[in-house]
Length: 422
Image (cartoon, rainbow, N blue to C red):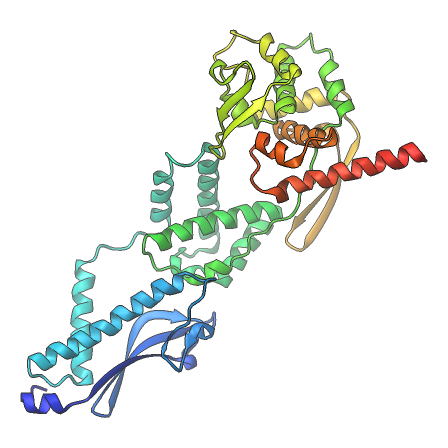
């Protein structure tokens, strides 16, 4: 294989990229090769990467640019390194007066790859990387967000155990997506929105892995996140008055629960923010605090009804109000709503994939801490508050979310108008 420099200089060697459409995988991706030609002999050197043929420019032998899949840029960088590696071996061989035959180049690449494997630290496993992501997020994400991440990990681990196969980053294809969704629908009995929430969490994990330079199957970008409008349960103004005037003198715990709930109806604050509310957040003009969920700085004017509740408990607790755990709060407020006679049947529609389910429940069973925030938003719109002003108070950034309440208000106006003129 070793020849004189005169012979080495006369040899011809070229490199370019090609894909093999005859070797498509189950997802329709073709492997990318560096094609090395030398003295009429050709060697195909694998890059270890694959691409959808739609994103390959065969004429120019390179990847097409696509804003939809930014990871193509990283893929381009990786395969170019392999081509550069081949060209460096050829140049070094000529400098050493060695004929860079196809076999010689392959042998040198094998030696380089073997040394790299020996020097490289092993890549973290799927769950090891997710654990490190959650740990790194402790100081930047809200408690509820971290809780959602951990819940997502638990369901992924349960799914891994169910299918008896380790989850890997290369595993993130359409087949995995379908199997995971079916598992959540069928085995965990989840609604479409709950499944969508866990798919969204999975994509957060996978995007983090890509940012860390971990090879991830790019098919995960096509994972659909289910989002379906849910039925919004709120109290009418009459129901709010009924709850407010209910005699609960026999039970301090229910009185406290009712007052905290009413405070949410008068301010629109999430229960997580009411729980952290102290005297320091209260000014003569209103409430000023940074929300736990979104970290937004909000100022909420203080209605007389809300101020009356605050004055009732002033100085009695470390917090501004007698808050309890959200689990107990949700149990107790249902009890209060039942005592208030909120028994009207409410139709609730849920979806599990393509399956639609309709059920009717007494309204008191559907009342939760979040019903207070929904009541504030709905009644504020009914009373004529402009949506853009309301968004400044509630901290909503997505107008589409608020539009769901606007539609409810329109239906209320329609009922009242026809009721008045009938």
